[in-house]
Structure formats: structure tokens, C-alpha cells
Length: 489
Image (cartoon, rainbow, N blue to C red; front, side, top):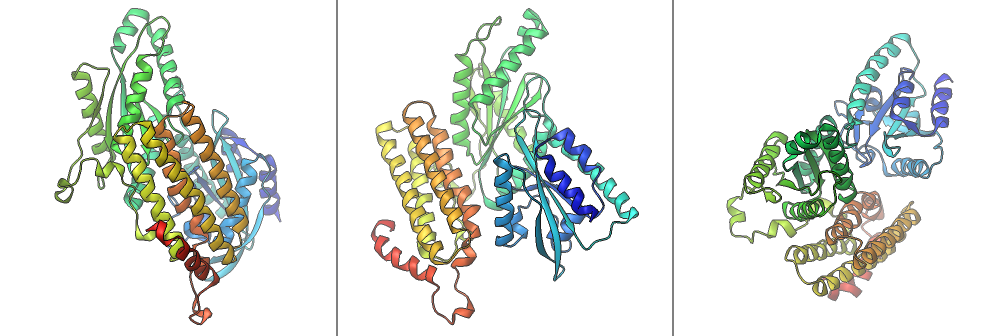
């Protein structure tokens, strides 16, 4: 069929720059569903065809991940295809059966990686079509119009500032919408910094705008090298930058901001001499809009400028009546556990809660600026509990005959290896303690638990077909739990 030939041609192309992707998308036949998702696994944009194949009537795919709309076995196949892409291989077109309006539909699904201007992976495109659909001219015209709209949005999402290589304002504002939605849905903290170069007008007046541009390029490069992987840097305008910090509380963002301020103050800038920056920090509050949140950070920056510059100022948080009696650090140190995280297996659930508690204890010590001799045992305990929990978890999902058990166990080994490398670099002075916490608490614990772990949860729950008897996974969990009860409590 023509559609098969077209998707196979796209798959054979391999990795594409954004500009090349846009040209190819305009050639898409009408029945092809197209969705573009970010590296966090959530779709940015999707046309009506892919939403018809994957979503219930009236629902949209934007903001959702594949695990939100597809069965676990299909998600596993798609994950394997993405691993091939990340390894530099060409992903084959997958032939799948999807349930569309209560009937099975045979589909072909191809995945294509998109490279950004810096030649790094920027997004992943899904190309899906129902093999039973005809290709009519009027459908082609409708799809062509949809593609043009998607192209315009993709160009904005891929936008970068030409001078510094940082994100553009439009790209930041698109990302802000997704992050605020994640805050509202999952309660994950979210902070922002506004950075302003002190006395930058004097640099332009004294040395000229070319020197001023070089200073901005050098500053942006320095900030990008010192930010964490999850953070993003945006050129807001002139000499002002914005740093978006997902999964970061106000206090943690303040620690990062202070480190950036010190790094800039001690750096060498050719021609201009020493340079300083002022920073305003604000944590987004539930129900707060981007404009309200940004205004509070901007007001904190104003306080820093008026207070003498070369300093970090924090925007105040609104405190409710129940929070008034709590320690002001309580909200900073706590990873919030939610019943939705539970899978029903006592060993797995209690292990997850224990890791949350240990991560909170570590962050409390960091914020209290404890001596490294006090922090190191907490790091060792958290890491040891991660290793032990992974082992417990594997005993459970192997007993449940989880189809992707071996792949999940491999992911555990890779996370542990990276965690050990992080700890080693921290103790050699190559990593900041906040970076280490970010990786252990969020990448290893929270993100892995809310992502890969949820794929095996259905295998752990007892079914009516078992006639009331426990599944092997539940029995194994209870057996192992009895051995560890004293330590987990």
C-alpha cells in the first residue's frame, strides 16, 4: 500500500533536523496520525487522526503520555522502539491492533527522532495510520491544513535565542503551561529565577554593544554549564534571563541561585573585568497563573537590585492557616506521598514510602547546612535502601510473571550504576550536593516510580478469576515484608 511505502520511507531517513522534519510532514497522506512529544514523554501537539486512534471521544492527546491512553503491552513495544532511536538505530514500523470506538483497528506506527539546532535530541514524532482507511483528496487537504498549524507551533517550540543559544520567550511559555499542569496534577514543586546583569548599560556605553553581546554569550554559556539537566535557561530580553526549575522548591532554588551568583562573581570576563548578577526567586503556588508567579519573582529581583545588587532575594510565599503552625522549612523538605502512587502490594508500597522518607531526611540536612560528616550517612542509607527496594521489587514482579521484568531489572541496574557514579563525583568535589539530591530523590525515586513502575502495577493486583486466592506476586510481597517489617517500620 502507498501508506506503508510512505512510512517505511520516513523510518529509513533516520534522525532529522527540525527543518527537514517540517518539509517531510507536509507530504503526509491524509489518514496518517501525527503527534510530537517532548523528552518527558508527554505530547506537545497532535492532529485529529492520531487522537481518533488513541483517545476517547472528546479527549485530546496534548499533555498526555502514551501510558495514559494505551495498554501496558503496547507501551512496552513503543518504549523498545524509542530505545532503538536513542541508540542511533532505525526504528522499524510497528504493526499494532488498537481499540478504536470499541472495535479493533489495525494500525502501523513509526517513530522518528528530531534533532534541535544544537544537534541534540529535541523531540520524538509518532506517525500512525489506520491501514483500513482510504486516501481521499478532500482528506488530504484537511490534513495539509492541520499540518501547517502544527508546523507553526513546532517552530515556536524549537525556538532559541540567536545571540546566546538560550531558549526564546515563546518556547519558555509553551513549557510553562506543561509544568504548571504537572504541579496542579501531581503536586510537584516548581520554581523560577529571574537573573539580571548588574550595571550592564555601563558595559555597552563604555565598551560598545559588540563587547556587551560577547558578555551575554559568555554568561549564558556559564549558566547553561552550571544548571541541572532538568532546568532550562531563557533569554527574556536585553540582559535578563529566566531559569525554570521543575521539581524544585523555593529553598532548593535559592541554594542553586546563590551558587550561580557566586560563580559569576568569581569568573573572569575579558575586557569588562568583574561582573555580578542579581536574582529573584519564586516558587509557583497552586492556582497561580504564570503572570502572577512571574510578577512575584520580578518583585524579588527588584528588592535585590534596590538592596545593593549582587544578591539573591526570595519572593514570599502565601501561608494558609494550617501551615502557620508548622516549621517554615517543613514545606521545603517534604516529598509529598499520594495514595494514587500505591499499587496494592504491601512490600512495594512501603518500600516507596520509605524512600520518600529517607529523601526528605537528606534534604532537611542539606537545607540545615549540616556538616558533611552528618550528610554522608544519610546519602549512604538512601542509596542502600534504593538497592534493597529494587531487589524486593524484582522479587515481586518476577513472581507476577510481568512480561517486561527483565527489561525493568536492567533499568534498575542502570539507575544504581548512575547513582553510584553521582555519589563518587560528589565526594570528589565534582558535583554539588543539590545535584546529587535532585538525581536520587527525583530521577531515581519519584520519576522512576511514577513512570516505569506503573507499567507492572496491573500484574500485582489480584483478579476475580483467582477465586479469592492471592496471586504469587502478593504472596511473595507479604513473605518478604514479614522478614523486613522491623526495618521498614
